[in-house]
Length: 176
Image (cartoon, rainbow, N blue to C red; front, side, top):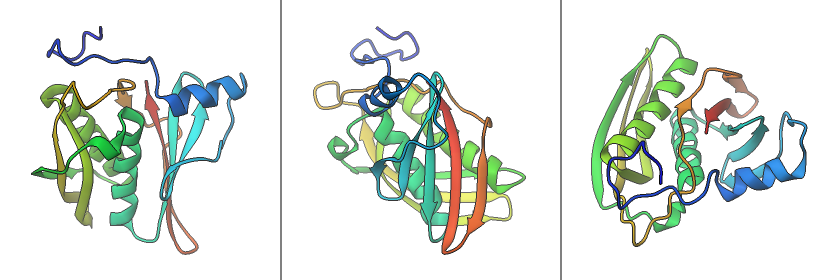
């Protein structure tokens, strides 16, 4: 049983998500880009002892929404999460890359400390050092939700957020 969650009814059933485990079985050498799409606009990146997300979107709000969907897709079967409760989120940072880390870290904090899972993200504002959003989800229900892994941290290692033709692209590594 994992010790980072205070509720004894909630356990981490696998060391890493099935997607991440499959990537590590494919090759012992870390790949820069694995190409395994886990949801629209989000691909897994193989990284030694961690997992990364390559996120693409036409706008910054959609990029941040997709990054959050990617995070929770690694944690659980996101289709089992009912968006029954809504919460406001606001995070601040000096630049867009740090704002992405702050956003995902805040969501992971709420997951770990408050036992929440989210399946819908409505990012309302991204810019001038601020992100505001409404997130929708529910409390973890051990009878319906399997937690595949724990995310220890959203890291700055390999962090990149850039404008590309047709929108934006971000790379973020999650410490499992």
